[in-house]
Length: 108
Image 1 (cartoon, helix red, strand yellow):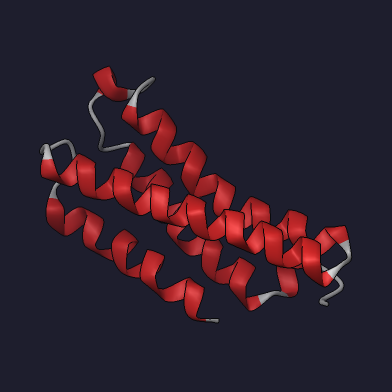
Image 2 (image 1 turned 45 degrees about the horizontal axis):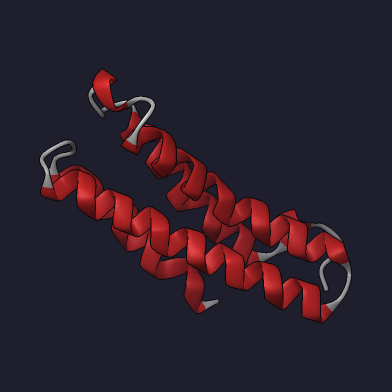
């Protein structure tokens, strides 16, 4: 395992959609701040956080478990982005990059 989670390509790739979701959250209506926006931000931040935690646990089994949790959080983030787009809380073209980034990191 890598010494630091920051050396992991999967962590580096997981940081990209998380950062993009934070950028998109600024576009969400204020009324959604404690609803969909909050859930979207938590799930997006959870992806790289779980990769980091799994790496620091020290065993392959723990790492695999936390990667599985990260993948679930990524699917949750993608769902929130699609929902926000489908109900016109976010413009579709604005979310496209975040959705592509969600697809990209799990392939490492």
